[in-house]
Every structure is written in structure tokens, then in C-alpha cells.
Image (cartoon, rainbow, N blue to C red; front, side):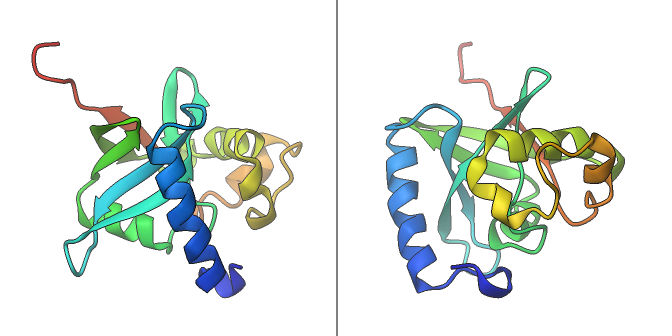
Length: 150
């Protein structure tokens, strides 16, 4: 469904379905819908994603690498996005420098099983193996905005 790193029609249909399920909060809080303005249209685009927990923070990693649409949209929006899981939570996604990504990437393939076929390193490999692919897989720390009055 992701030949050449791009979703085919079936993958896009599944993505719409999972975006609705994750956004409604029908799964654990790890599974969310990312909402971000499209970089060319400005229209809100929605992506179903699995978040990775590491050292007390949440992270998003693209299973298809840094050229996928949600990454390009997040970068164009300067990291501003909304994470939806039962409710909308505005956030900023902070891109992690390449030298610091390896342990996050390892946690990602451990915690998000659907990503394993797309990442060319086995989840049991040492962190050093993930450092070798860190240039192709960005990681973003999720920083939720505080609600007014909190």
C-alpha cells in the first residue's frame, strides 16, 4: 500500500478511517490524529499516527521518512499542529536534532508495530544501528499548549 513511499488509494481510505477512530479516542492515547494545515492549500489535513513515549515525553516519527506529507506540512507550519484524541489539543512539534534521534527511533519501532515494515532496522538492533538511519527519519517532540487558566 506504500509503494515508493507513497500511499495508494487503499492506504488513503484506511488513513481516513483510522484518523476518525483515533481522533474520536476509541483507542489508547498513543494513537492520535494529527491535524496540520496543508502547505499549499492551507486546508486542515489529518493523519492517523502512533506516538512514542520516551523519557517522559511524547514523540512523533514518520514511518515513511522525512519526505512524507505530514512532515512537510508540519515544517511549513513551523511546528504548529493539533493532536486529536477525544478532544483537540493544540501543540508545537519540535524537531529533534539528528544526533539525538537514535534512541527515539528505536522506541518508535518497538512501540508502533505498524511502522516496522517501513523502517530498515530491526527493533532488537542496538541504538547505534538507528543512528545510521537518523538522517532519513526525523523525530518531533510534542509540546502541548497549556489551556487558558491552567
